[in-house]
Length: 62
Image (tube, rainbow, N blue to C red; front, side):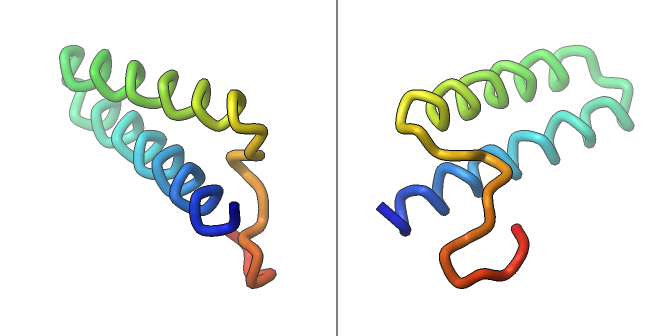
């Protein structure tokens, strides 16, 4: 599941970045959309038992 797990982690990272960008832009709509995506990504990670902050299989930090 290595490739899939890393794809899930990347989705979480991208969603977190989008939340931060929306906050910095003070865009409430973009923030709501980004937070929904982050919630979905974290829910997916949990449902497939992937640590969203885990270290990739190659051993380098995420």
